[in-house]
Image (cartoon, rainbow, N blue to C red; front, side):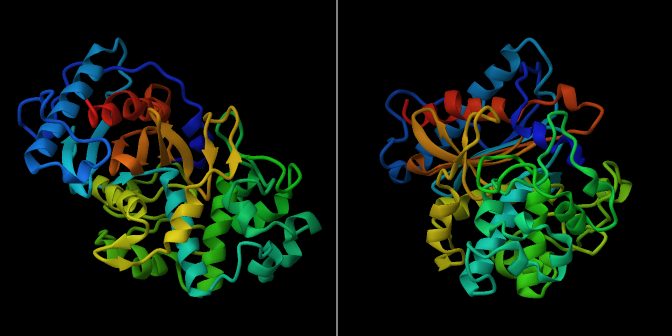
Length: 390
């Protein structure tokens, strides 16, 4: 994904549709009837047969939604996965397989936030109130006084006042520099830090640099040790091309990939490549309060704090924002989501024990025809979450 398109992840309001999808699906049972439903208050008590039927029902309703639309906005959706209580009830692929890796765009931001939480838990980062001057001391000469005083908390909530992604999807000149971190810092503030929300991929890249500085380790190495390997997320071999172009043949052909800046820092805000099943794992980790296979690998307090509304995002998506996670609703239920441009989504609905993942292929040339993530979130609210209680 080109950083210049990151802002549009929450601004796309598009028509939807697709006719004649051929889906590979893990569920083939008859549609669930009125007597075989998932209890809204205790979905984990449902039998395997009920969950299987639920998956078939959701699959049928999604197909109906796609086929009833009058445009081709769904034509690049490659995967839809639905997990209930840690059990996959629906797994659908189009022109793709479970082993394929996809550019998850700004879902990367939620991964980077998770690594910040882990560094904070182990003491490498001392406090969310630490300032940029304290967190990136080697760059103090690149900071004005207002930039130096920005806190980690403000970075996490996109209220730092730094370079905000433009309405047309472009970023500031830092993307064309040979030192992204220095370029972001020298750009200065465009509003009072802590004053209001401003979606900023540059801010997310500073978070990556902070984790590298605090831990003394490359971001990918740290992520493997603390997050990817414990969750069984495949990251070897890894492509780490220089993030200077929207198109890179090596990146496109690679399996797992995480581009880097000129200093070797993996991009904190965009272009991580993951498999849809691995996206489900990240959602499940947060659904389970940071526990994985009985082990607490991410503090429950961080999960709670990261997915609590910290700032209103206003017209930009119509949702609230936590620590690099969107805070929203699915129907009437509280939910939170990692969202990426072009139809990348991990949405978690805690009361329903539900994790939903959409993965969509996109590139710059077909961006206007790519389904908006807000449309997919709408499907979670109108189709998937209600199916749990009908």
